[in-house]
Amino acid sequence: MMSWNVYSNHRLFVGIVFGVFVFLSVLIAVQPAARIQNDNAPLPTAVALTDEQQAGLRVFIGEGCVACHTQQVRNIEMDKAWGGRPAVAADYAWRQRLDVWRATPSTLGSERTGPDLTEVGERQPSDLWHLLHLYQPRSVVKESIMPAFPWLFRDSVAGTPAGLALHIPAAYREPGGHTVVPTRRAQQLVAYLMSLKQAELPTGEAAPAFLYVQPPKAAVAAGLVADDAGLALDGNALYASNCQACHQASGEGLKGAFPPLKGSPVVNNTDATLMVNIILQGYDARAEYGVMPPFATRLTDAEIAAIVSHERSSWGNTGKPVTADFVKKLRALVKPVAAL
Image (cartoon, rainbow, N blue to C red; front, side, top):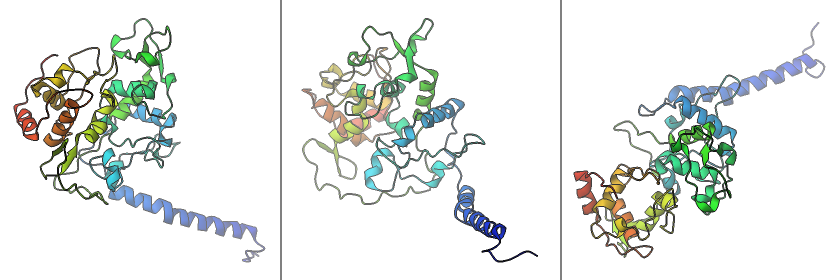
């Protein structure tokens, strides 16, 4: 006869413990996860990852990038630098298991040793910049503590497409080394990074607000440009967050990769039309430099005016500041960019 005394019937004891474990697992983990998955779907404007980008996601996980980078914009003002709006659950609804053996990759991260990557494809849309950053981070960000990933690159061999060659600054080239080209895995990783952009919310749906917003400055100080609301915009700060990674804090750029702004005839020209048009529409007319993306959809007229005014008055440049109205008129005209 079976004993119902849990102290003497070890099978009953183990069965009860196992049953409680299964019940709590379903209650605490499985059921909430299923409800969240059913209640949220990818945003209608979200673009699914291509096979190349999916392969890059695997490289991203395999190389341990998740240990230092997050992909989550919190709803506090200090996170404004990483995305145009706080993240919502639908931003992560596309994430699926890599295969039957492995769980859904946790790319949201828990430690922000390096910058958040939520919109890195928007902030840094140059594949050349990303490749240089992977090969030697300090070649583009002098203060970077990120380790280099030289094993994702190799010396050029016969038949390598010339367009894949990296223009590495002289200070970071190996003595007598060959031309360096990215491997397939490096290209896949960059394709994944370039895909990281926040999808637009459906029309009529308000974006969550950032909390703990600092009070606006009372007046427009010298060197600052006012936006439409009369708030002061700091051209130096805008330059640092949008331009500095390529053109450097010194304005000297990177030889063979990104052009200098210091002493540039375009920046110092009495007429700032060409300079503003380049920022609005992007630029790709000189093979020795990486492609500059357009900023028309990323920056307002006032923000572009603040950046241009900062660049024209810094590093010994002598150009005069421009106004938001000047940028607005050029945006409406959409003039083609002439060759330098």
